Amino acid sequence: MKKGMIIGVLLSLMVISGCWDKIEIEDRLFVYAIAIDEIKQDAHTQIEKPFYEFQNQNLEVIFIAPNPSKIVSGAPKGFEEIKIKAQNLPEAIGMVSKKQNRKLFFGHTKLIIIGENLLKDKDKLSDFLDWLDREPLKNRSSFIVATKDIENIPEVTPKLEKLVAPYIIGIIENQSRVATMINVSLSEFISDIKISGASMLPIVEKQSDEITIKDVALLKDGKMFGTISDRYLRGYSIITNKLKTGRKLFKYKDKILSYHLTSSACDLNLKEKDDKLQYNVKIELEGDIEEFLFNEDLLKPDVIKELKKSIEEQVELEMKEVVRFFQQDIGYDYLELKDWTKKHKYKLYKKYEKDWDRAFKNAEFEFEIETFIRRIGVVR
Image (cartoon, rainbow, N blue to C red; front, side, top):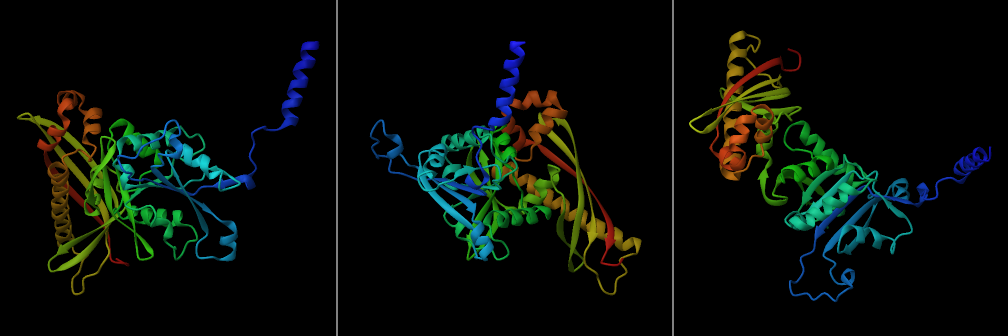
C-alpha cells in the first residue's frame, strides 16, 4: 500500500511540475537562415594556449532571423542579421548570448548558405556538417546553397518578400521546375557527402539588388573542386530521373519552337564489351508544343512525325554532350551510374569498383529517344 502511495505522489508531481527546461516562444530567436564561411588567416598567426577561442576566430557566421515588428510596420527588410566570428559553430551560437536575450532555435531554419572558402576546406566543412547532423532541433529539409561571398546575400532587399530565405528558395524551386537548376536539402547533402564524398550545390550571387542562380558547385572527396554551368542540368536531371518538368527549345525548319516537358522517364541497360561498360539509355519524354506555326496544319500526322523527329534528334545531341562533358571535362560520375550499376548489375560493379573513375571515363553510351506530343498550341 505504501509503495502505491509513493508512486501516486511521484506521478502527481510530474503532472503539476511542468517541463523544467521548457523555453517560452517569446524567448526563442527563430533562425530562418544561416550563412557561414571560413576566414582566411595569416599562416604565421600565433595562438596563445590554452585560450584558443580568443585567438583563432576563423569562421564568420551570420544568423538571419525575422523581425516581427519590421514585418508589421512594412519595412523593406523584415529580418535581422547577427554576425559572429568564432572558431566553430557551437562557439558562435554561444557567443550570440552576449548580444541577444533570446535563445537560438533552428527548428524552422529554411536555408543554409555555405561560403566558397569553407567548401574548399574538407576538415572545416566536415566539422560543420557533423554539427548539423547531430543538432536535434533542426529542419532536415532546409535548402543548401553555395556562394562566393556570404556578406552580400543578406544585403539583398527582396521586392516581393520581407524575408531573404523564402525569396532565394522560391527562385531555386521555380528554376528546378523547368530543369534549369537543382535543389538540395540538408539531409540529401549530408547523405551524399557521407556516402560518396560527392555532391552538387546551386551557387547564389548578388547582382545589383537581386539574387541570381546560374552555376553549380561540384564537391568531390568532401570538398569543392570546381563549378559547372546550368546548361548541363537538364540532361543530368533526365538521366538521374529527377526531372519534373522542363522546357526544351528545338529547331523545326527555320523556326525555334518550345517543347514543354511534362514528364520524363529514363531506363538504363548495361552490358560489357571489350573490357568496357556499355550503357543503353532509353529516354521517354512527354510534353506540349507551346507555340503555333501560321500557315501550317500541325495536326497532320506527317507534321507531328517531323516535329517528333526534330525533338528526338536534338535531345539525343544534348544527352551525348552532357555525358561527354561529365566523362571528359569533369572526369567523375555525377550521373549516379555507379549506384545504379551496384543495384542492378552487381557482378559488373564489383569488377570495376576499385577503378570506377576510369571505368566511367571509358564507358560507351547509346541513346534511344522517344517523344510524345500531347498538345499543340493553346486550343489544339
